[in-house]
Image 1 (spheres, rainbow, N blue to C red):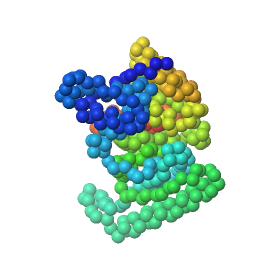
Image 2: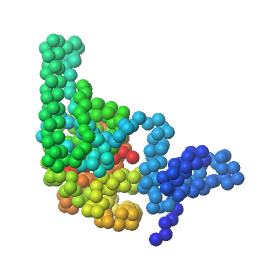
Image 3: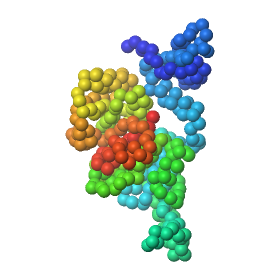
Length: 365
């Protein structure tokens, strides 16, 4: 099969040369097509072209380069899997998946527990006052209880590692005071973990204005987030066989799909590419077929399928589709949105956390 050239990006001549240098250091053959051949340095933009087979890896490399150029946050010296916890019944499943992914990604596990401090109290007439002696004693008890829970959980994890129930992965705990979603997002901004693994309540009636912590983190977090519903049927990460990827045909979906495949065993994985729309368009089906063909060629052991969901009732139809096809994980790429957008127009990640019992893998690329 002929490996044709595709345009990776159009950049200034200087930036294109930098991209070309880094890509070739990573073994990716790169060509620059100048719009001004006689004076390339004066060109408004030049095309960076690569082989089609190198596209997913090249997109990821360029994304990382440009994030660094924009002054992105510092990264931890070793990759981390972040597992926010509240010492609930969901810890066991979140821990199982967190250690599973840490083993695949050669990362360490960090458990983050956020506690609320009674630093301020509101009186009956709504005056703000500083905490009292009784509040200070309550804070001491909260921290003491959290430390005891950490000690017990440490012993439990070490015991499971000794029994072979969990891979031998370095792990640690961090206790932070504040609002859970704020502290989780601050951690991700500072350390850029490879993945955040969080528990959810799944399907349940809710009247909450803001919604679950997991939904909030998924909408904003720069790191990929894997949501583990309390009522899910999966007993262990090894049970993941069928993954659906919801695409809007964004170019960055290629990076996200490649990332999803890398987190699971392609030798046993069946991948479904789906697109939801309120009207049937031939072009959408052509695009889905193209994505299926692309990844079939680049991952020969991967079983691929595609489906076009035609409905404006996307959420309910999607949930029915996941159940019918026995999908183990739903993955999709989404863009970070500001607080006003999240309040008045909740995104798919937030809606699925509240209304679905299917594990979610949400990326931001």
